Length: 214
Image (cartoon, rainbow, N blue to C red; front, side):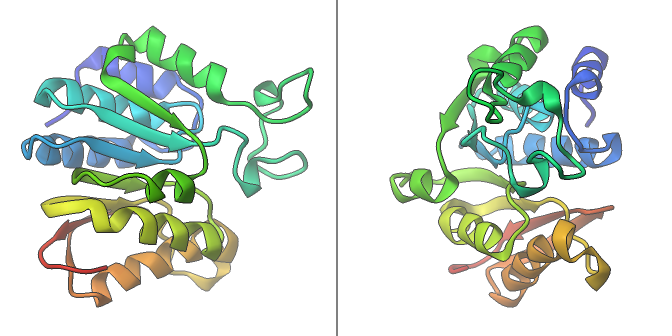
């Protein structure tokens, strides 16, 4: 299943780094997970590019999309790094603040009513979260500290039959900074016996919960 042309156009117009092919795979996973009747949660909002797809799938399923981010940017988005965008810097504070851009992105896509933005650090939000989720999409920081915290904080909430989606999974050791930490949590999920892989699209991995644990 693919999103309507206007949703795909909004996705492609939004700031962000997810290629269209991976976006379509994420959308298909979100549509499938939406059938469970549970919320769909994303870790790592940035400016809302992938949130558009989750929100549209949530709207179709009659559930809610949630997205978690402190909106100060991950390591590789800070000044001086390859993925830094000066337009995301608050001119008064001199700090990154992607929240205004995110809100504008959702408004322009007509999806504000289908998303709850959880503004805070992923481990802090996870500590106070207790409800089951139909889908967890991990697309946050790329250090082992952050990827592991995202996995340990949110994977336990994936319901039986629900989906765990991990972005930027790069098995090549040359991609240490951009994708080795996501690769390591992906391996951990498979080795746990709690998840089985159901699809691979470039750096996007979709796994289904088939047992207890993480």
